Length: 357
Ligand code: NAD
Ligand code: TYD
Image (cartoon, rainbow, N blue to C red; front, top):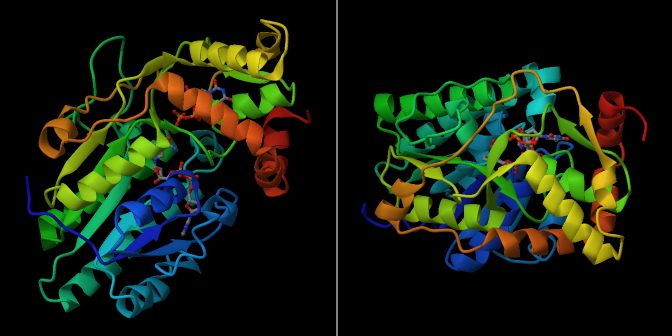
């Protein structure tokens, strides 16, 4: 294992989104010696409600801004004496990337390059002080699997959607900054996350929200595509492990060994909610509506997370049974949050895609 890296001032980008906010909650309590500066543009996906309880923490600061604003990034790195960057900020939804790829390239590729460049200059000025730049990526950069096999860190990148192509582009830039400049980068590639604060345009929270509201549940294609689901708090602890213990230049897959066909997960969520809402068994399944498939829809993702387990000793803490029940309870307890984040710009997009419901 590499020497431990314990940051003192961490720049987190995209910390008002789903995974970034869960990471900040986790990291502030796990690393009491570190300050966290959250740089987030607050797009439709960013919400300061996700950081309730954190804002009063004297070790936390929020800055609204764009990772593509090099001047702002340079100023923050300097004035906060940043020694680590964890880069979550991105456009993250595959369907949106199919409708409009440009923003994905601008944020995920160009934005990452600007952030990398400013961080590299800052690291240079600090003259050899310990530093880490951690790029948060996805298993989707590896493309699609058939019925068997797993993605390892050595699997060639073969992204199929504009979203995953933009993430693969960013990963290659991160690699290039390490190879070319010796910049101390890390790169994690995680499977699908679920849990609290998940924006209800993604499969699990969309199904939960629509079941509660008794709206149709759109299933793409035959519903038999497979995803490998990990609780977002397990992702947060994995990112911390990689940041603190990972070897510079390293790539680490993160996954929960928890494969599900979409339709099975939809059935499970329907049945759990029928029980929680006191509905007749099978009632919510009646909302299932098969719709046109997503173009270029990847069939199966499955992660081999052996490296992070062997080298860094990380393993998920959640069982899926516990995680999904807790998640459903969270959405039931936080219906105001769902209402708030799905109003305005998001609602317009959703209605344009699926019609008024
Ligand atoms: P999200 O869409 O919920 O949040 C993204 C955040 O980034 C938002 O708060 C948004 O305001 C912010 N942002 C967008 N553009 C910005 C910009 N130009 N400057 C500053 N902030 C900006 O996304 P998420 O699901 O939390 O994903 C976070 C990261 O994890 C992404 O890089 C994504 O590719 C990766 N990832 C996601 C999953 C998943 O299942 N959701 C799995 C693996 C990896
Ligand atoms: P999603 O949550 O968008 O994550 P990703 O595409 O990044 O894996 O989708 C997860 C799976 O669920 C994917 O196979 C597409 C499918 N899906 C539906 O069937 N219906 C939906 O309404 C959504 C949003 C996704």
